[in-house]
Length: 503
Image (cartoon, rainbow, N blue to C red; front, top):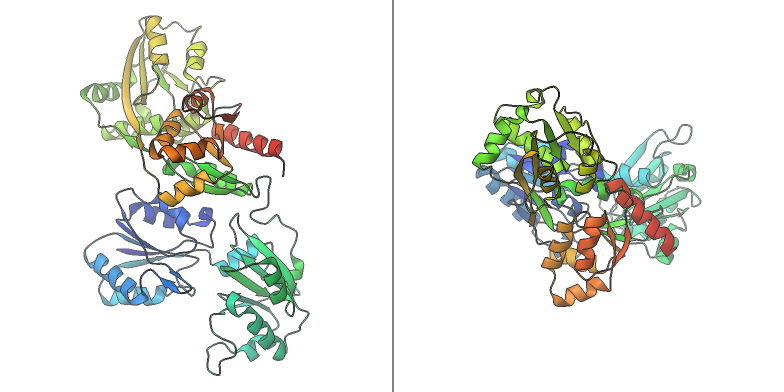
């Protein structure tokens, strides 16, 4: 099976749910150059990733070779994700690839994406239609030279159309396109815009007229990739905050969290205008259950108290219960479920379980404080946790006479990020740490010279006191620590740091 997936215009959050599911299932991913890089974190770590992108003057793999590779992989029975910027059937050669696959007898499924022809203008606040101004729009490629005698675009006809004209891949021929449209009757003073890196934090927009846009683009230094919009609708730009304009605009922020969990943090930071460098240094993996773990899960309904310290722990326990044919209904009335933090609560809720106790602080000591008034002597307590997690809860409850089953259900496994991600991270403004393991594993992937650069480079933002302790133990300085040890608290700490640093 081959999935032809539209990655959208650039913002990774605009990938469809179906596209995300297909990427996560794929054995092999073939990706283009633009609008796809940030989505590769979704790919299974064992999947093969192949760059088949094209840039001006550079081709990683020819189109014929790419198509032949898709056919070969499909015939081998692989689940293949062909990830293309925008929509796979809009100027993406997706239809040609699909035809070849169908002729070869390979099943193919198209997963539509948001085309940059619509996504980039929308991100810039430009409506391609507007009542009484434009009731239609035309999308053409600007890759053809308007000065040629023979081409598919009829520029004379396009000039006479009374509605919006959107041109993709036209920056290299912008001046010639504008001159041809004006010569063919389109008003020279008609509003026009160029939108570079649409929908991403790097987005830049230049608004001018058809006659002056090329000069303005040169003055501002805009380049590819960009979308051109010609029409009166450009004048109706309603002043929306464009991508890349927010309290974190101009800041580059590193996210070291595991890829599977980084989406919420990364998306929030990007929505606030930051350019985010994904440098995952850990991966969350379930641990092969021991006989003790299997016994604890099978008898989960017999515990008096269950303490869950993370969303990862919740998901791991739910997975183990499912392996026994069990779900939330196998918990018993009267059991006390303790959860550290809103993320853990949300994960419990997703599995149909309500937390009875949520400490105000999101650390193990706070769990012990929350249970101070509860008799625990002789009571059975289950504490599912990560490998290498602090034993403070287990030791504290055992000291009070509780019968504690301490089981390891998942582990934070070190991951070595790509070299370009490391280089980008060392040049960033801020690096975020969401756990002690993200600190230790970040240091583990750097050589001695890179550790020196890290110490004098991005400012460290910590999610809480335990993470801050790990940062300082690594010889780094904590620029700011979140007041709340959760993702919203971490984001607020980044905002507070940015406000203190000034524009």
